[in-house]
Image (cartoon, rainbow, N blue to C red; front, side, top):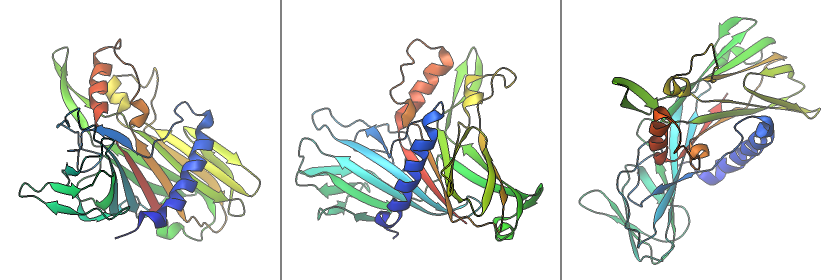
Length: 303
C-alpha cells in the first residue's frame, strides 16, 4: 500500500501554491476533507450518506480520496483516508466501508469484520484514522490532452520537445440526481469545484497562460492554477451566451525541452457546505440537497 506520508509533502506543497494562486480567483477555498454526518458513512467521497448516527454518539467521519494517475489522467491507484471522530469516547465503533486492504495509520486500535461486512473498531475512546484502497468509480474524473504547435501529441511524445505547448484538463462530473422541475426531468449535478495546479521551471517554460485561473512568476518558477465547475452550467440552466461557467482548464506556454514532474488537481464540494440557499429557486434547492455527501478528491498526475 502506498503510504499517505510519502505523498503528503507534494500534496501540501501543491495545495499551498493553489491557496496563494487562487487568492485572486472567485472561488478560493480548499478543504482536505468534508465531514459526513454519521459513522456509517459512504465507502468513498462519491457516495451519499443515507444512515444517520444517533445524536448521543456524536460520531462523524471525514474522508479524502487520493488518486495516483497517469499523465493522461487515467487512475493508477486510489487511496482513501478516513478519520472517524469520537468526541464522546465510545469504546466500540461500527463503520461501513467497501475499501480493500484497510490499515490503521495512527494508533493500535484493531477491528473485526461482522457478518453484514461492517467493520467494528475496538476504539477504546479514541479517534480512528485508517486508509484503504478504493475500488468504486470516482465522483469526478480528469482527462489530460496535449498539443505541440497546434498538433495533438501524447504526453510521452511531448517529453523533451520544444514549441508552443497546451495542456488541457477536462473534468467529468459523474454524480447527479434526476429531478422533476416544472414537469420536466432534469439532471442536477453535485457541485464540485476543480482546482488544478502546477509548478513550472522558468528555464523550461516562458509566456505561460491559463484559462479561468492565475499565473504567478517569482523569477525562477511559475506557479499556475486554474479552476472549473463541471456540470454547474447544466444544473443551473444558464445559457452560455449570458454567462459561461468553466468546465475545463487550459495551460499554454513556450516550452524548451519539455519536462514536467507532476500536476495536482483537487476536487471538492466542501466549498458549498456553508452556503445558505434557502431563498434560492428550485434548482438551487436541489443542489443544496446534493451537497450533503461531502468529500474531497485529490488527483496526482504523473508525467
